[in-house]
Length: 303
Image (tube, rainbow, N blue to C red):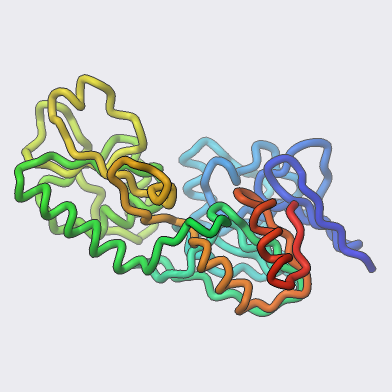
């Protein structure tokens, strides 16, 4: 019985002949038995799920916070195994019918309460390629964290205010926990709501204070979404902005490539561990990365 794997909007459809699985943000005129959701970032949450919804309790909690309330939720799916993917809280990869592995977004490093992705061997692999170009080399998470802490210390000793910029859900909750004993750490209100959710789920002990101009002690550290503070804030506090993202390797501004995703070397290492017979590359640098894999001898194609 043949297996069909197709792109469907921002998601993927797998038809094994007897069951149809919608993966993440599937759209269009698509029918499926189950909608498997890897994590709660907006680009992976379906507006109108195809079939019954399967996701971790953490993903469902964070999805509700973002306005996604799913009704037909099931606690398990026969022939589907979920595996910690290490991306953000509650993120999962899915092993489907024992032979198709969908990584979703993933990270191989243990990071505080997040376990790094430990993939099983499988025949068919569907892998992300957000950073699937050879110049995206980040290094070990702990070394990047050491670099961040030393950079913060240097500027604090100079009396400078600091803004740590990243997407509001993901690494900023980890950084907040790392800085839990540091004075004058504040949160943008959008970051605060996710910290509060992490606390409700039992993963962090406190959310830090919300930043309110005029009611802060200086020098401070502010955890903020990217580009949300405006000219008035910048002129008033003259902060040092540190960009936390894998994209920092390509940018001239001050940044450290602390990412919720795996880097290029991590992608290759993961594939070597899985030893798949067939690889489908999804998202990001899917064309470039599938070409690299093909040149290495893998049976790979973009999707």
